[in-house]
Amino acid sequence: MYKMVRIFLFMLPAESAHRLVFGMLGFASAIPILKRWMHKCYNKTLPADGITLWGLRFSNRVGLAAGLDKDARRVDALACMGFGFVEVGTLTPLPQSGNPLPRLFRLPADGALINRMGFNNGGGEVAAVRLKKRKNKEIIVGVNLGKNKNTPNDDAVNDYLKGYEQLYEAGDYFVVNVSSPNTPGLRDLQEKGPLMEIMQRLQQKNHAMPLPKPLLLKIAPDLSDGQLDDIVDICIQSKLDGIIATNTTLSRQQLKSPTSRIEAIGAGGLSGKPLRARSTDVIRYLSHRLPAHIPIIGVGGIFSAEDALEKIEAGATLVQVYTGFIYEGPGLIGRIVKAIRQR
Image (cartoon, rainbow, N blue to C red; front, side):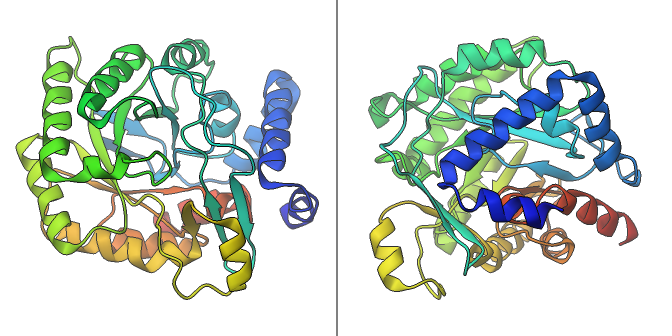
């Protein structure tokens, strides 16, 4: 059924299709009979595959990656589709409109997306209110934090602290995003010095709270082995709770889409099938170097149950989907959950 729906959706500009789907999800989740149908359709046949991590009970190991529900508008509806957890954002302390349109592009021949959204969101305070009002309190919600575009890198740590404060009561775990390629200079914060300062300052704030929340770091797939070794050092010294590997890539190697199309699209982060192998390589590299108590959430190019199992066998404890969810539809979640359970 989703293949038929996708034909129609892919006739629309990518961001227009996103708005349409999110509008329909909001409508459906607001009507009890439709919400129950969604939950029954996508959750009834899911096997029990729960896991407890950081003291949180995940109903299954498959989550939605950040980027789809930037403003925490559809957590209840997405929970009905079978996700074990949903990560919202990236959220910044102040609202911002993001980059000019168009900024989201499909590459169907590659099973990929290119985006340069630029952290478009309504700000942390508004999202916190939405999250507190959500009806489904059992779904685990991660909050992906970023800095505002106009904040200089020297002051970036204050944006992450502010975002954490705004959303502390609303999120179950927090993710520091310094790996998006769509905010100028943001990836410079992945260097050891500035990143160590951000993570240690956040941990100081976190552990001063009555109930510290799990604090994770999301990294790019384009890091060298030396940079990944620095990430391991930072995780250990800052006592981080986990890593999300990986964000989108700047690489355009071995794409099937015409070069003219890629050049016409221009800058942006590439996600989807072309990212699968590199993401898995990064997971495997980190899993051999990180202490066992620092789990990895694997994301990047998961379009099938086999892709998800590959991430888990490489060392991931949980997995997330985004581009694969757009191309394959909500049925992908159930197929992954069942495969993990059988394995």
